[in-house]
Image (tube, rainbow, N blue to C red; front, top):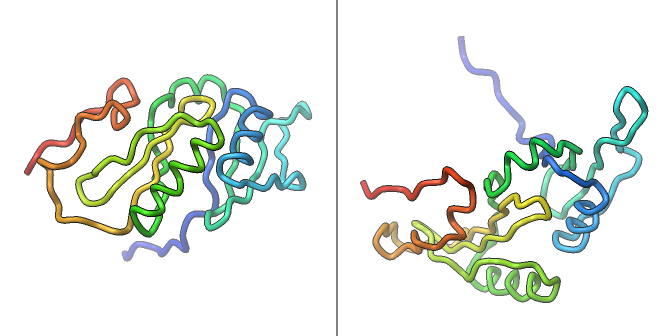
Length: 158
């Protein structure tokens, strides 16, 4: 039996501890637009999720899940794509203007990356489509920004 096809990613769900704080941050930092017509409510009628449009991404759901958000602190499930290093520089300027702490530009194994944290400590990365030669020895593998989760480990050569 062949594997059925997938059309892509429908939406991205991000656990948060405070909906209002996260909504404000994602609007300010990632130019998100709140889609209130898609708000989600629990069975008891309480608001438990916001749906956002972020340019070039599928829909993003901010789901009220404080324990899950705490458990994901430091993990980096989302790695956004930008064309090149000049785009990393533009993101550094943007994050500085918004007062968001971030890594310096880091040399990855194949491209360049930038890391920053959302209000719950979820690590978000921007990574270049522009590549350099695969080079384990020249990568910034000792940066603490690459190991923001408690159990993250550096890749080994080979």
